[in-house]
Image (cartoon, rainbow, N blue to C red; front, top):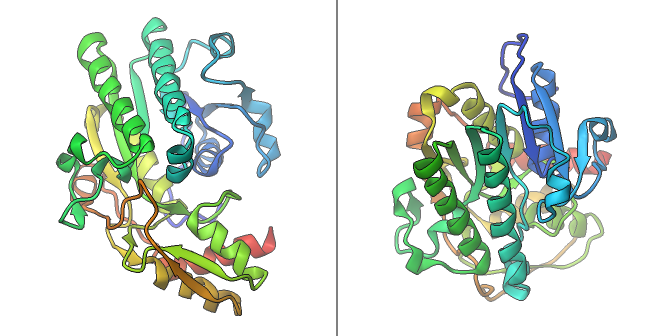
Length: 314
């Protein structure tokens, strides 16, 4: 395990359920928790194509199907709910996918309520902040009138449901708002893997928005943030945190780093901003630094270089 952040290995009997365990964050978190001697159960609609050994500990099922949810053991200590339809523009094109996010989260919360599971870590998004004048966003900066897309609406709805379950049913939570997580275990059309895929073939690539600046988070920094939530849950419960790098990078610059790392001949083309997408975002991570001792280590240049090496090998 080549994580920059290392936890002391210890015997740990805590049983953790990861929904979306075959995805990008889910796969990395799954293997890391196992290496730290946690008991981990995965739940996903698909088998893991990256680490096939994890399939032995994964329940294949759909969170929209109550019969599939009944397959999950009831003696869970903590749920890490990562499962979601996660591509912003895909949900603009097909908004029903946003409704699926809301229903899936409600079903997870009902599973927790009915089985007296009192701890959940939820994967939210920078999209809840929308487009605002200030580039840097604190956790208190959410305004539902700035909701840009069905995806952001689903995440705002999910968070609201979690807060309500906390007040009504005593559910303890930590909400993590992630931003542009990249690095490995991702073959989707997210920005970094898509750029790497096309530039390896010397294909022209299009960036939607000349001035778009976003907060890119290397996968191991993201995992470190989640691990900090797991380890400190009883002390930091019932809080919401930005888990990101705390630095903004122009998408053109990111594409340029990828192009240079690959020695690609791809041309970078500029298009207009797409409907529903946040244009400028940098996370204020001061709360996470203070309460979680969260400290991202991997710069965008180092992270892209690591990503290019990983994808080239795969």
